Image 1: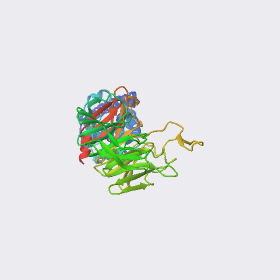
Image 2: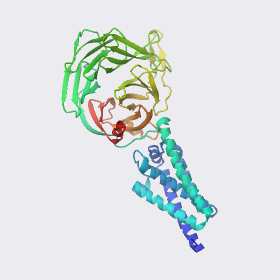
Image 3: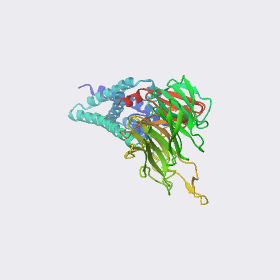
Image 4: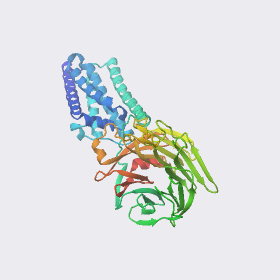
Length: 494
């Protein structure tokens, strides 16, 4: 290490010059395309939660080091910090390559041409020449310890950010989505030649569609959407004053219902003939069959008209159970507790997702609360303007609602939630052509990742259905099949 002092200084000057060029170029590239740089950090699978602060901190650090490396009085200390910063970048790449659920885009500018492995080698080269220059300048115990402290501290700093970011993203998310690639791929599209369709259910590889315009008609497709059959439901009796009829299929049975009468028919899909299963009580606004003898419903409490959840069981005798405390009132107990009711057959759990706040409820079939889970947006309280009409006594919305969650569907331990809000670092342009699906683990109570479902002609998704290997969406007058990729299939196998 005892080289000519002049050669040591020349090498030190060259290394500092290379670092100055690198950091100047990197900082300017980030400033020129700052929005894209911040978005890339926001989509990072490791540092998403700190994207805003890190985007400014990195640029500030790079420019600060450029100035410090240019000054002779601060050059050595700046070089130590430069090696530390390159160690931070290198540790990040190692974590991306080995511990990330997916590998995001690289940095911008010329360095974008480099893959992650080439980027790793590039960074290691700068750490190597920086370390050599420092050790040549001060090859003693103090110099070695100082260099080791810088490197180890930099590694621990990135690991700490990674671990805390993971916890924040999954449990305390500041509305930053992770768009994992290859979650779904669009494989099939079928024209329905009409509007008003919704998913009535699926069973034994068959997909069933109901229609609000023709409520007694059921369309059946196989999983490839190639074989289409049409059925007409026969009601016995069929003289009731229906208002809003819907059909749900569970296994070998189907349920046709209208909660405003109220009435529930039940029949077999083998002949599509239905007889009255329950009538006269209770009134309900939403129904979700669980099996051939049990349904969960959302109704209204007598007197207050606030929403409540309940179950209807009918085998040998009729049993109606109501749970007043699952849905939590914030404003009026009616609009603010509106939401989507679904059921996970794999978990045997009821899932209720609020429309206007960031929460879904998980309960068992006895309506006992399992847990409440917060979705990733930050709307903790429903943003609604509710007025009561004095003449009729009815409650109405005086302004368009701020919808957080549009619709949800559960399959095994996963909840697929179509969000109504754009998150941080997301392109506004995508909202004209896509719906965003956020995926949650119901059991672990955590957010996993998100993905886009792109549409044609700016038509929005109106309903979704989840099966073991695919997501089906109704978009306008089309039914579209999206096949699950490894990220979903891996989660379902856990």
